[in-house]
Length: 268
Image (cartoon, rainbow, N blue to C red; front, top):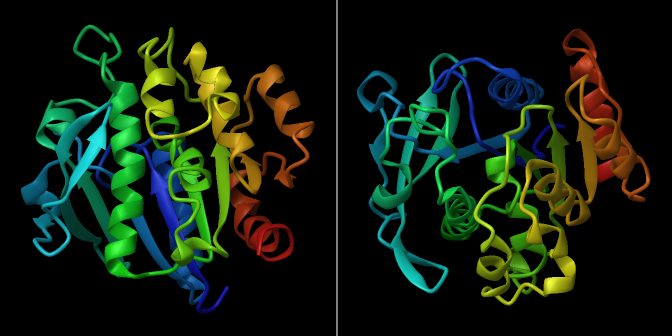
């Protein structure tokens, strides 16, 4: 994987958030490619519960200051950056006071989903792509982790389909068992189609529950990795019948060689 450029886009990454399946793999996979001489960047949201001082986040003025339109509203984009200690890995943080200031990731203290999680996901997807465009950094692969990042493949295939920068970029989605109860805002489909995404391409978002969001992400990806042992049977079947190259679950101690081989033989 030497000199291959891989962009990792994740809902959560250690050491910035607590350890779980998504946050750990969102660190381990980039580290593995970095160790092989690949060029990597990681993007994640800058949630309010990330300690900026401890992790030495700082704003990148030349990348910030753009407004992104979400559901017909202008939302300012702030970009922050930090380096994972000892690894020389740069992590970019997508920030906006309206969406990411609050001191938790996806739910309030009562465990209730934030009502604007759908808009946060749209803003995150657009923010990543706009920042990569400003960096003029062309990824060979974009690898998506976690449901908050799941709109990125949709926007890449529709909203940004004419961007020459990404003409040869392949998108991989890792599917985890880590989900949420209930649905996001029932208006999510309307907000996505506002961005000229054809309704037929995202019709599952009419009921924006975890499984339908992941199905929509899978449909717009070039390859899929089953990243948890316990992915639901219905989602597993959807992946297996999607006609996309897919990698079945691999235990952590074996993933490095298998993921590398999958990138080389099924994605690139």
